[in-house]
Length: 122
Image (cartoon, rainbow, N blue to C red; front, side, top):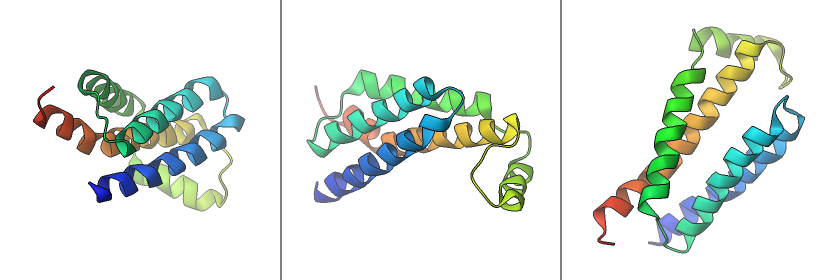
């Protein structure tokens, strides 16, 4: 139980940073909202609350969104990021690659809580 609190507490802070970094994005209202939802679920998890249906919806939506935004070439996208040397967006493909992996991170972080919610009777 203690690991779960630490894990989700750290991710709540990280998602807050992710949300902060989205304010200069072309569509911050979408991405800040996504990370705020992730923060809320992390804070609930810190309290030991794992709402089954909402977590299921979030994980599925993030996985679908990640597939939708998945870059044509992950290695090409990463190569562009390394070559550029900073975090400014130069191409729409770079932004979609970042968005894809952001959604994937949310889904993966929420997955242990989702599994736990389906294992417990409620």
